[in-house]
Image (cartoon, rainbow, N blue to C red; front, side, top):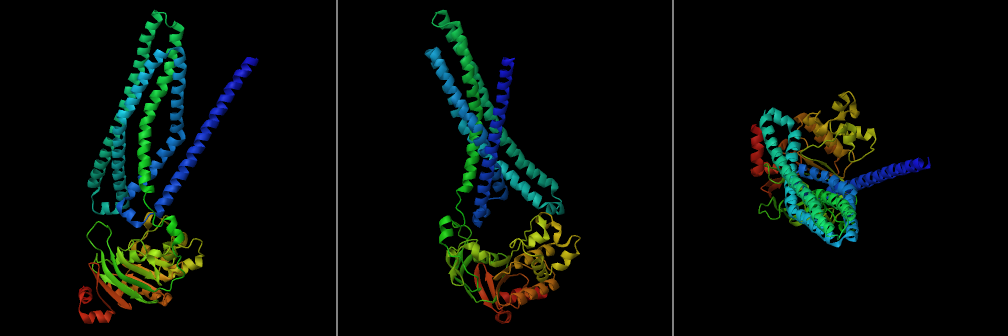
Length: 521
């Protein structure tokens, strides 16, 4: 009875310890995964805009998936790898107690295992890297297709799109298959070496038994111990492939972690927090290009003085540098040379979040997020009272269509606001820029999706509400900017002419030509 009770106690203890071990591994794994993913996302948010020009969204999102590979290895496979190495060392020590010569024979086969891992490693690394790159390309294309699904259907190019994606996916599958082939080949070679080691020890040990240099019992025990060496060694080879994949995953994560943030910790401490803006802007001989190595200059020798409360409009042909100039004013990109000042503060010496938080910007491309209309408008001011949100919506001429929806401001938006029209999305973006009462407004083609009457009402509201604050705007539709205090005409990144609407028409330059074109239309 006591023997049975003791045996039951041992089993119960084993179950409890196994459960505790699994729970501990799960806890460590989840904590490590959460911490690594949070750190990665935090770093991505801190990166400057040029990083996102160089990297596709699919490449960035695929790196998020690499976090799981690293944490799985650290929390599960890593400890098993350590235990396997410890087990091999322990069993080799026991084997040397029985027979040193046989132990040396076994060590020879251990060296063969190490050689196999060394030979396969570079092939595995290249295969996993190739697999990742092709998988990222496939995922990037898939994300683009899902985002532009309406365009694909409008152009009736579903078949061609499917072929292109299948081509990318087949390349990824082939690359992944190659990595599996190398891994399986290494495992097979390891299995062969393990069996060969047992046969070799059996033959050599049998000779020792025949010469009375070893007993049958010792040989049997030795062969049993070999099982304790070969099994962990085969695990090591299997884990080695996973280790190579984890190394590649860590390298890909480090590629992002090694990217310098928009503001380093030192810069964040030393840069000036800009007080409430008046709206004075000065650009002194600003030059800029997106790629430092490129010869193509997007902005050349831009000099401009803007006084508080002025309405400044930038016009010109597509690609003339209007939107690029506004991005520089927000500090998204540093100028190649020259100086940008806000209220006398050099933008490159300012803590950029303190500047951007005071500017209301309506970009060309309206980005809405999943959630309610109320949440989207209050994005820059979480917890804003509904009265303020409604006031901003009224200024943007959005209140009427919002209240006409069944759930009003509680209406949930689909991805990118797909359940709204382009004009409705644009008006929500305008309301979002106004709700936190910005010190300065930047309108980058902000009313391009609105009809003329709605545009006129919105602009009148903005003029009245922000009459003592600086407003910068770009527009192709010149009727939008004709009442600006100063119209700056850009051509190929240069200021070609500037003045009021009437002054520019009198000069009969590019502005006069663009105005004449639109008047005829």
